[in-house]
Amino acid sequence: MLTITTESGGTWYRPGEIVRGSVTWRLEEEPVGLEIRLFWFTSGKGTRDVEVVASRSVERPGLAGSAVFELQIPRGPYSFSGRLITLSWAVEAVALPNGEITRLDLVVGPRPVEVAIG
Amino acid sequence: MSSTPLARRRPADNPFASGRIEGLACRLRTVTWPQLIGRLDLLGGRTALVGPKGSGKSTLLAELAARIDGEVIEARIPGSCRDPWSFARMQLPHRVACEHSVFLDGGEQLGALAWTRLLAMTAPARRLVATVHAPGRLPTLVTLCPDVLLLRDLVRELAPEDAAVLDPLLPEIFCRHRGNIRECFRELYDLYAGRSAARHSA
View (cartoon, rainbow over the protein chains, first blue to last red):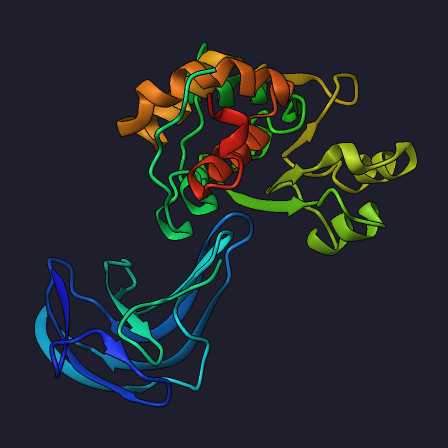
């Protein structure tokens, strides 16, 4: 089990802000590492894009524990939805090498909702 | 035609978004995976997956490759490629060896000369499986013939809550795209995106 929580308890961040939070884990298989990634990705019609903009590693995390993280959001892109794609932001934590994963969706932009286009 | 009271969805929630389509498992109707791999080896390991555009060849090829033991080399030639042979060659090792199983998606893009080169280059490989649109270049492992029942099955997996609305539309959509399942999904995506509601409205 992997859980991500933000320090503020919220999921809305303005461009340039820092996402502060913690990852808690209790795993059945001993991981060699844990990766915490801040990234955006697109979904919708056609090819998908993804970009990891910040990450941090936890080495030898053990079967259970927790770690805090601080990841800075760049100036953009904003979270948005048009007709063809949605661009979403998220923080994910991945246990390596087995790939157990959890994700916390974020909204990045000047308002607490994604920008609607079209 | 009946109206289609489908709620407009944002792209991330569209049941026909590319990520969801990519998650669909290949439907093997008349053969099991072990039987298919057995047949592949019975044919000398050099075979073709035959089918028209959008029939599921790439999905089948990828799933077959994932089930093959040993060193698998996957190469893909996109439809828009100007120099298919160079593009394919770049993805193959400098020296193809007997432990390699080569899976080529888009074999129909290769002309006769390039095809001969491919066969020569991959001759030492344990297996060569290529997708093509027509039989004849290699012994056929599977011929894919999608039908509206397959489309309905896939659509029900992607959008089970809207089956009653979508089912009656599928025969016409299937015919309009001449059995190209990928294009059918694109039209269904647009339906949820509110882009072509007029076509399906009363």
